Length: 253
Image 1 (cartoon, rainbow, N blue to C red):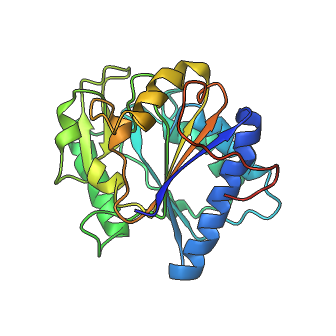
Image 2: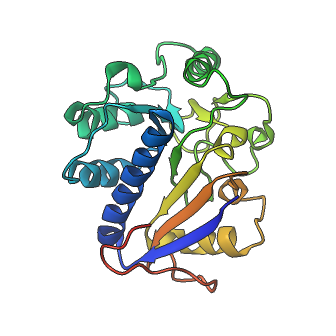
């Protein structure tokens, strides 16, 4: 692993442009290296932040992007809980990602079949990898320390073989979801967590300073051969005592 970087911004207003810059730079590197950029997106507050800041970039070209989802709720795409649906209206409809470059679940399937179908789609995109190797995964973290749809004390935390797992008893609604597993997350070339707001401060301290306490799924994200970023704002970082980075305005990650 290339090492963990914890970068603190005064607020989400400063964090957003840095996140977009990170995405753009990793996309440029990936396309130069192997002709495409594979990125896994998460939902929640990331949707509006990422969409706004990426669309503000002066020369965004997504024609060689392949987009997947770190997890997805098993709801119709026009449901406000659909992560794909939110990105479609906020971002995909406004950029030049090829139609075949967006990997969506089949929301008409039962949850187990949906997970198997999504795993098949990922294997088609990553035919040579035991586990898909994304260029970048963008993750969030809940106040309970969950990430993707990997929740504390859930059996899925121990999944080692599946690429995509179904979950039908999510403690956070809606209950039915599909999620990438830890072997996939930890195979990525770069993982970036975005965590903002004072409600995240207690768990962020535990995750970053608690010796990787396994009760918090986010603490299990340790890319084997990749970069790991934690991009956080001052309220979320309020309880941290570890050394953190602060970038000067306009500086690149």
